[in-house]
Length: 280
Image (tube, rainbow, N blue to C red; front, side):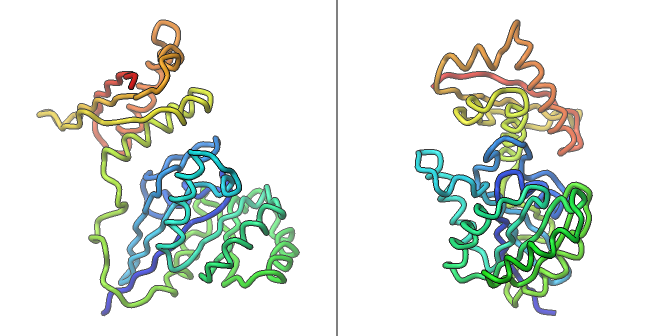
């Protein structure tokens, strides 16, 4: 049996559920989830092997930034269009409960120019009556060429298996790029940094998480199979240190404990996490 491959860009507005979907597809948390804008800043690749087909999913940054011009948006745009350009197929994810037609049509206008097949997936289908989607689908079909429409709930794992079955039909003969047991192109250190960034987003207002960098300085398995991890939180303004530390160090303690728990769940091991704030 010949191997097949397919590259899919997951595109959509911030909070449509792209990260939830890619995590559900691969079966593990590789992309962070948060309600704040553009928590996914890097181009995350999720790998799903179904029989002879290897499906590569690019979790792109939320497309809200496309019409914004600043330093951060330039990085996001680069990652966004890299995901589009590398893909064979575009999976456009829509929050069924919050459909903004002006935004949607503006996005589809940009995507149709690149001449790639588009699948529209309505997420959070449990929050809306399917009957309400029929006129929406009809309106979209009257303006754009869409391969097919699909409804899912990434949170409740509804419809995803059938969606993957439909997507797999587009795969074509090619050698696999990744090994059978790989689920992402990102290493463990990247995942750990993403988990810390997600946790910081949960506890602090949005100004800080977008102005810090994270690095793993120690990552090793101890003799008793526990894991020792040290991470630097690199800030560009000294005023952030006091905020991250919190009163008597309570804030960074909460962040450390919450992040430690997440890492433990991913690696199925007891984690000893140490955090240090560094000004550069």
